[in-house]
Length: 230
View 1 (cartoon, rainbow, N blue to C red):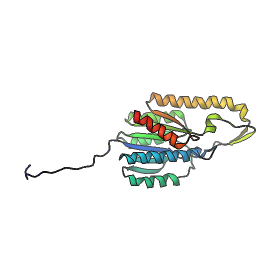
View 2: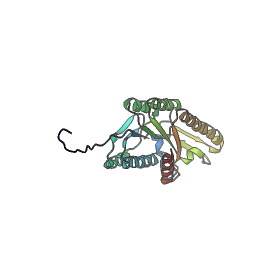
View 3: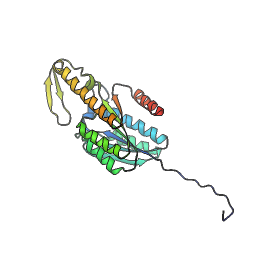
View 4: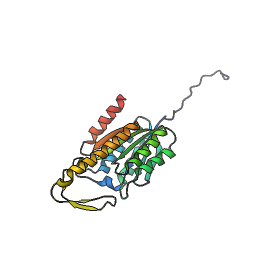
């Protein structure tokens, strides 16, 4: 007005939300009864989600963890960052035990600004510790999405004969006849799934059970279609 000239103000508005993608890189995620391990599937999910988020000009950060945060890519809204994200995912190799709950508390404490937290994990850890971490995130105003990644052999226990099971994460070995323990195993495992799902629902967390035998494109398109409706 003072110069009697017209001006156009241009600026880029910072995205309101950042999506934090947390990938469980602990040793139990190495398990695969087929060609694809839980970790390989989780990495692919994280890569797809990162690309979708960046492609719509939103921001994303990536955390790879086991019993602590091992790799961290800070928030970025640059689509070119997808190359660094994919390289980091591809290069990571699991070696350690799991400690999901403390990592969730750390994310809640270091990210006070409300955002979306996507946890991709088999959740083989203390259930209450995980749910306490989720509750901490929800208390901070974060939306939380849990992709519970499991192998079909874990959910169906199809083993036969005399089998030696070799446990990951320092859980030892056991030789047994699966038909003698299948009933109790499935009862305990399904109880674990039910408690985790119920805990997520109580905290208003979107819980998605993912089976690594399902084609990745079906898993991702199904979830993204659900998000578009909500």
